Length: 117
Length: 117
Image 1 (cartoon, chains in turn purple, red):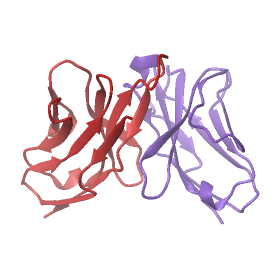
Image 2 (cartoon, each protein chain N blue to C red):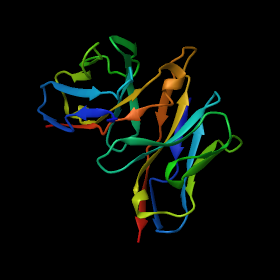
Image 3 (cartoon, each protein chain N blue to C red):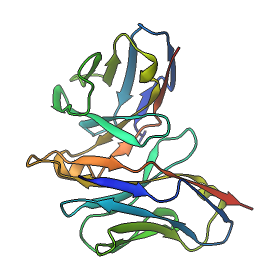
Image 4 (cartoon, chains in turn orange, yellow):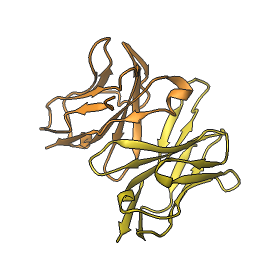
């Protein structure tokens, strides 16, 4: 059973470009979470999605950031018009259940390291 | 406000000696607590979790942690360090920020464990 897959592992973008980060959850998992880890900081929750639904996006910046988890295919975290401050490691996690239990059963991917030049 | 403090950013031990990674938390509610490990260039792996059952929690790879409510601590220990334990360790608290069902994971900044031969 493959774990959570994220690609690309490393992504370099110039200021103003778009970044698309992909996350394939573990087989049988329908809940996906995105986190951001800035240099010298802990992980910060961004968004929690189920298939075709955004459940909680309270950690997402109000502009330029969006996330989706379509019925088919991976979850996508999209950052438009990237700025240097977006440089970070972005981690995706998945769980088989959601809500209170789901937050205790998350399996993490290896992360995507975004560098904005 | 809920928070997690990992008291040491770096810990260095010799192989075969005990490991102690310290974590204090602040939570208005009965928390769920976790320790995650991150090996270089790999995803985050759950070591163990406390969810209001036994206060002494045993995890994988010989690690354990004790929940002490009076001290608001959840320190991670291992009797004898192995070279493969060298990694970044994160203490995490799961809290209910409001009346809704969506818990949040609050992450510590991490403790880097070095194991010397």
